Amino acid sequence: MIKVAILTMSDRGARGEREDLSGEAIREVLAGMEAVVVDYQVIPDDVETIVERLTDMADHVGADVIITTGGTGVSPRDVTPEATMRVIQRELPGMAEAMRAESMKKTPNAVLSRAVCGIRGRTLIINLPGSPKAVRENLAAVLPAIPHAVEKIGGSDAECGAG
Image (cartoon, rainbow, N blue to C red; front, side, top):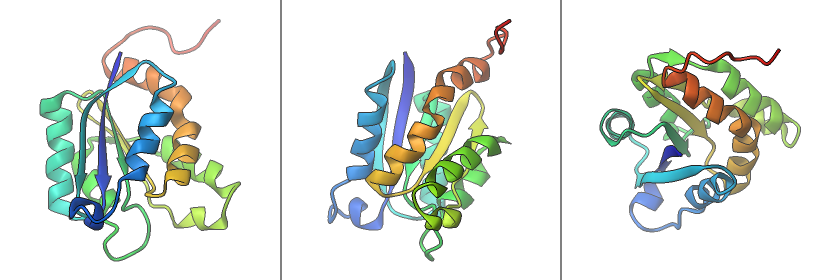
């Protein structure tokens, strides 16, 4: 069972002024795989708060995967990628590239995504956009690779390819 933490970045959501539909979209997509949500938080778009939460979820909660939503665009308060880069030890650019490539099939605005994916210790961290539609599309692009990534990050020495 993959242990997942969900972290939503939303100033209005953190103040209780907006329902977190993107966090719910993550839960819906994950329902199709063997995963359990071990932590869920809605926090403001603040670099230090994001760094603190990501670090805690990886180092103390013990999440195998942290999926963030929100703060990946170009607005002044969109700081999730900067915070994520401060937390990860190794970047996984292929995951972010796959998400952007899939999104480009739907909207030219996908080029504005600054989402980052990477590894901290034994935790995979994936940044997703803030809209529920984009969450579903982006997560679908990388979902098939998540179980294998978790296995390898956890130290498995099983072969990666078949035959």
